[in-house]
Image 1 (cartoon, helix red, strand yellow):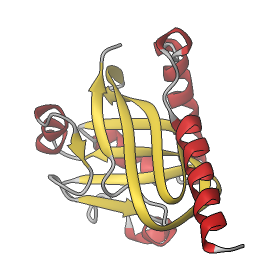
Image 2 (cartoon, one colour):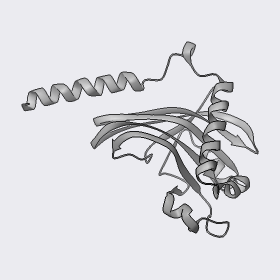
Image 3 (tube, one colour):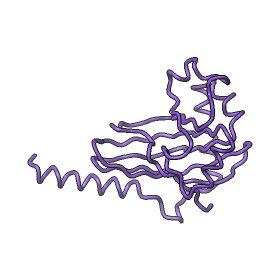
Image 4 (cartoon, helix red, strand yellow):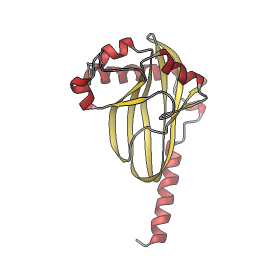
Length: 187
């Protein structure tokens, strides 16, 4: 394939992914009860695979649960998903997670994630900012299997926000949520 064909193929894939990642029209939007049910299932799966997180969740100021994020791209990429904030076990708001990126990346992936806000000040930052860009503001720690396999306890987790990934499917070279913008949306 020559350079021109490669650029045309890249543009076609990027446009197709952009169309696939565009949020649904309001008429087909997910209802709050559906989103809450998906959030419940996401939490059940996370707790089934990482039971050590229960104590952390119980002491958190709030949990921001995104049951499904779709991320895709080829050189230019994007991701989007809808989630909800729970404070004291009750839904306190609906949020959109969205990101656009460029650089060395390829693939498509679906995953969920849970952000655990450990303090009132980290949770306040979410509401005080007009859309929070992950990586700016409260410190964010990505909890991986090594962290969970014994190092995470009531004496090791601290202030800030912890992120737990759930149900990663597909492949995306360059995956992560740094630079993702999280914005409260009307529901």
